[in-house]
Length: 142
Image 1 (cartoon, rainbow, N blue to C red):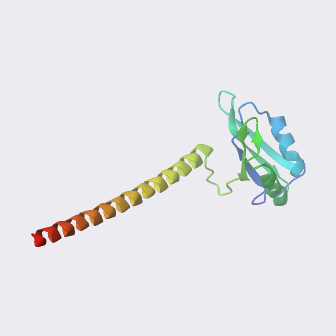
Image 2: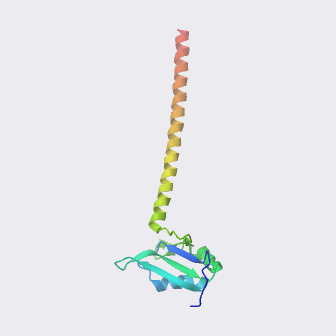
Image 3: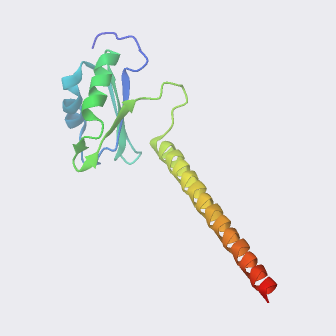
């Protein structure tokens, strides 16, 4: 392969890979969108696929085209996640990203639940105030 300068945005993270998919199949899937200059298919210490890979194209336009065409595509029954790889030196593991996304979803759910409880308490207070006013009116009539 020719020397390719590292460009922000030309390296893709590919996640959601079925454990049965092989390197050659993945390469065949990504080659139609441009020249693949680097390919990392990651394995566990036991030699099992980790379920994600990194693919570098020779230019950003090819990477973007691959994202547009392949993100969300079903491969062997699983939806692929294709996005620009984290370029910041501190790469996050997919498990960390999933955990952060899960935490954010939980926070949103908790906030919604708190809002519901607040609305219920406001409604109960309104009902209580209304009952107190009705009782006071009844006592005055007596």
